[in-house]
Length: 150
Image 1 (tube, rainbow, N blue to C red):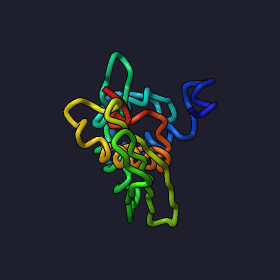
Image 2 (cartoon, rainbow, N blue to C red):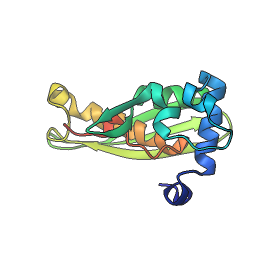
Image 3 (tube, rainbow, N blue to C red):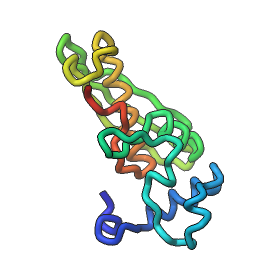
C-alpha cells in the first residue's frame, strides 16, 4: 500500500523489515547475496510465514504474532462487539513496549469462513480483528490467510 513501493518497488518500510528479519532470523540467501539497500520481494524477507494461494502471497497469523512479540508486544486482546447467528463483529487491540497502540475490527459469517470452522465462525472474527491489528502495527500490507473466506 506504500506509494513509494508501488512506484519504485522499494521503500523505507521494506528496508526496515529487511533489516529486522536479517537481524532476528538471519535473513535469507537471497538477501545475503543482494547489495544492501536493494529491495527484495516481500515474500523473500517474510518467507517463513508466507503462504501462496492461487499465485498470491498471504501472511499467516502465527508470523504476525511472532514478529509482534519480537517488536515488543505487551498486550494483544480482542472482544466481541456483536454476535448473531449470521454475523460476528470483533474489535482487537495491540500495545507495545514503546507505547504504540493499535486497534482494528474484524467480522465473520458462516458463509465467509472455511467449512471446517463454520460452527466456530464467531471466533474467526476475533482472529481476523487481531490479524488486522497486527498487520497495521507491523506495517504489513499483505492480507493474512485467516482473513480469507473459503
